[in-house]
Length: 130
Image 1 (cartoon, rainbow, N blue to C red):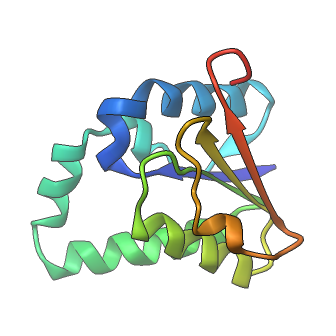
Image 2: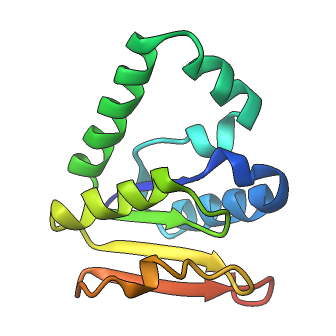
């Protein structure tokens, strides 16, 4: 099964260790990751990449849409709030993909919790339940 897993780069300082643990757990379960950028590069590297110009930004957007299209399930870590993640959740649901939104216990995605869609699962975690 193919998984598109992502999170916001801005949250890597605070939640990066969790990003990696979730990524590794998905892999241990035998799923195939479509992308590893969120665990491979830093926020500064991402910003530098996006500052290379419009062509890179368009490519990044299209790759993300393609990852959603090709995924069997989309998994997002949303503890650090991000409009981009909200957009990805919406696109995933529009494409009929099962979408799992994870967040650290104390950082719920209030806005996303208002979505009513049978394909959306929102789950909290902590160090014990990760």
